[in-house]
Length: 408
Image (tube, rainbow, N blue to C red; front, side):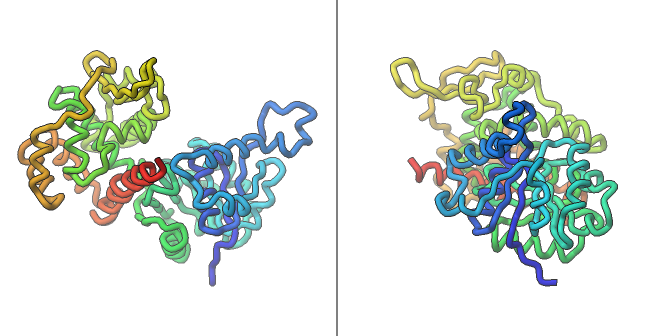
């Protein structure tokens, strides 16, 4: 069959759902964005479409205010987005060629939604879950063979427009034709770097990335290095963006890191690195204090930025021993980092850092061994893991950073 995507639906208008809708509209595709109607509607509001669309409208408004911008050209792209709620507009999903599920990470709720979707979806429509870790086989329980043939996971990273990676996970019954089409559509229409992983907890990007971050937490706890020096080493000398490790955790959200770590520890009972996912006390204390990073500006995270009463900007860093933010010299240089400037290639810089720093040597060795041991568990070759880390970490974060700088 000749397959075309002329209309997209996104169920769930939160950060990820709204971001996917903005991306599809920016690609010139008609997009239906749905969410639940509020539970607290008054009797008068129950017949008021605007009131019933309050949640989905708030989701779209958040994307319009997003920095960096979620839309390519919001004046044009908005004309392609239709808003609705799951009470009044569910049947409209029957006109859509691909339907993205981006709702709460609750297996039962997803299963119930898919049961309803199967009754209205048109023949041949693709159903894609944006889950970050729920098993595709469990989500598809009870669905027909035809549904399962058109069902897969398409996992975008936040912010959707800028993160290059699109992790694709096929189920045992997902048709090859659907997989081939999605790969081509994801790359050519949405501009993503498609990486095929397997139906394992946290897939590729989060599985490897959070192992690296959790290992770094333990090395910091041992006092091998300071947080600013670790980020300086793992920035440009390693070919990574300036967010490096701890700045990245703040950017992604330390609560998200905590969730993935807990999920990994619970599910990966046979993983030889399982204990790494047990986060240290200083990080658990951060979670109790809601020090989630960039999203909690007053509490901060590993870093805390702000302005003094007289308007001067400041930036502090976490002291893992005390749990308090302390002053540090943002312009400080480190001999090993400075020495890497004498080398022309990233490979030469990495080799120099690896040879001369215990923290870097331990962390890189751990990640490389862990990645190699994941074949064929999470992917068939190291190429998928390598591409996942490049597009999900280095390329994506660097693009966001560059766009942010160009907007100022």
